[in-house]
Image 1: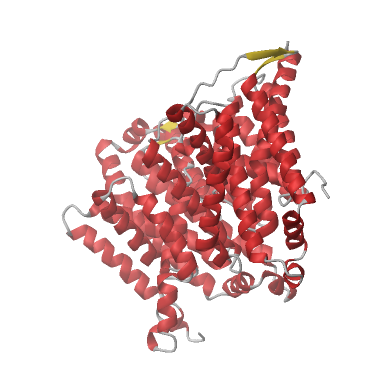
Image 2: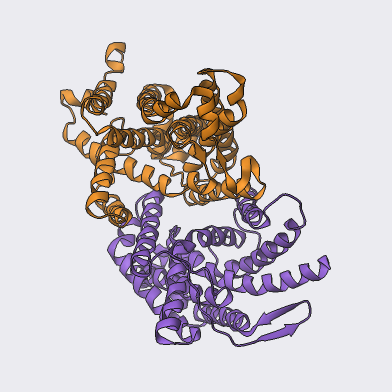
Length: 332
Length: 295
């Protein structure tokens, strides 16, 4: 690991994977929607893995960060669309999304990350529901009616560009976010943060005794993961749908999907979220064709089977196989 | 005027709280004995609600009869889950059992959706009403309240007076010690897991006696959150604590609803749910052992 040139080598298969997906989408007729969905799942997995995979904590309220990210973009566009900001409007929206997700994650993290195991899970399940009902109950940001900003988006960019934005550039942005999340994951893995997180994942008490400030590193991973989620929400939901309703963006099923993707691929691995995202996305896409409406009924037992039989996930199993060979340096 | 309304709501809250308590006892029992948090808790309540609905609408059976039936369904599901995967996950990280019970919840939800469809349903078991000061109570609510108290008392007696209950308490105190003394710890785990689920499913029936409408496959999630708040109020691992926590929660919920309704420009119903989440976080932060001390 001393050699800086091999330090970021494991990023190569990740980049190759995303590039391949992108090129398939670009060149194959009628496949862009599928590729966009895969990009969403890969990005979601990559962002979620940064926290769940590296700390071993399961955040059942993760989707709340995507939700506030969506709101961030929605608020920016609906309030500032007539200011003539041009593309800066999107930048402001993205910054708003990141900022709001970071703020929420700071508030949640300060409370929930003091708790462990079961208590953490219970607290985070509450976060998502609680936040949704705060938005609806206090009539924040339009309350349960949500925000519809299709008109403002069209006004700011023109109907044509808004359309391209939703059907093409938003998906490209998802690829960028996924790669960025993978890079951050590797950066953390290769730095002191990663070692501290590994130590605390294996044995939190021991890590504490060794003098690691576990709360600090947990919060770093939590905030990073949450702000990535905010970006995904802003891009994949706000820009594509051009509306936001509380029950849609705080839907716990997206958290479940993120958990499934990370588990399928292998928690705490760099390549895992892509593998998991591809397996999940492709099977969901084709199952919807063969057996519409049964995806959850099929995936829920699969989670149980994976937990019982292959808790390391696909990449985890692969990593064990190739231990000691040349490939072990590239696939992590 | 407001005072009368508040008092009336608090009485309703007390009755509902008794059912909430019963609803959470199973969760606390399972956590207390196995240290497993049943994240699919609300979905088991939903199964109970559908048991009552189905028995009433198709068989014309009295919901009171549905209580033991629901209990048996819950126990059956409990043994099935325990021996198929919960047993294997007890030694693993907490994460594993959380995800597994979560998936069970999803499976239940989707299965019920597949069988009954996802529209809202209800049944009408009219027995008349009784006027008491401040409010009007249907007899069904009174039956549900007495039923939940009766079940809580039975569980208490089973715990304290029977041999099986003593064995179970010994497992909670010290599972290794119990094993040495010849207690079949594995069986005790299986038993308490299925009794816990039995209580949960049965409480679903009681819940429909209180609120006989709005029964649908997705109703579980909100009750999972409520049960968590209640369990945390009562100290998470004590079924009796949970029962009293339920009553406290019922009072808070109905009382705050009345007060929130006085505020302008808010939706009191959603704010009440938000409040329960705030209570959850505050208690977890300042007193994770629960507000109610039980020995």
